[in-house]
Image (cartoon, rainbow, N blue to C red; front, side, top):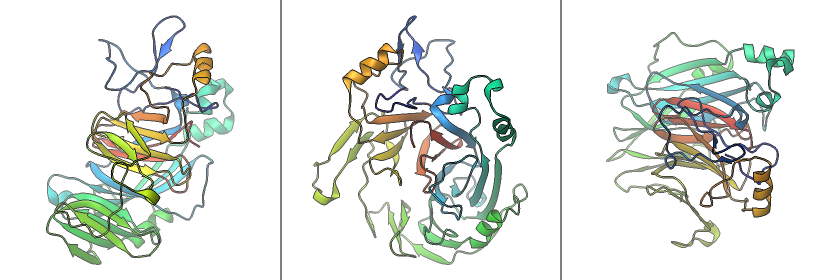
Length: 369
């Protein structure tokens, strides 16, 4: 799908984790946007994604699904944009049985562009440089350090000021703080991966007991060491409004003039509950959402519909967006089953990471800079 407001790289795309979406031909010269959940798939029809819609796309998984993850701030500088990329993250499992759960410190390195973005537009391999071929031949590196966690991990967060301090919200009603600085240092120093199935043991540094389990958890970005948690019994220690709901509506409020119902934007796009929402750390008007409808959507509130530009793009052969498609919808990523959470990378502009029941996707849309 294409957004007419972005002139250089404007394709919307989907991942390779499942049959993704792409424009379908309706005639010799006409294309339309295929919408997940709204348009049918004909018998025997196979959807393919457009590699030029992404600047990069990678997928990986742990041996158990992860409901939550967080990106660790690193010392590699930022904002950075040159491929290949490296990043660090932490993820918590939802394993059966409970004793098999852990949280994993993860290092992803050599995340190249592959055949996406400008390389997809270049065409044949003959047009690619030797340096491009060399990058494509180096596979991504995946290293982990795992620490045992009693019970499933509902939420996991890394302290911004000290990334090795990890907070977990367990399904047993406990918020725990762990010091995983040594494990993070091992990953940074490139000491390699743990042995398959090797899970370290340790005790949390702090433990806070709630009467029930919960899902709200975050560290203060202003005050190092300050942690807020909220449970399902309505016991909320620190509360912050969030633009998302179980009816699939995305709403945005101006907290300088906050009144119930007085939102400044209201988008009806997702067809199921919104499971995660996060503002871009690099573009103040941009945010992303994940939904139980299997889609991750990137929104730019600064965009407005331009009928003249849409007509010009249609004349050049670009797919025409339906009238009910919000012009602020910049990019759609799908192909993951049961999406739960997303995060923008704080130091790589445009880089997104999403978790679902079948694993993680790490990608950078071509029209998100």
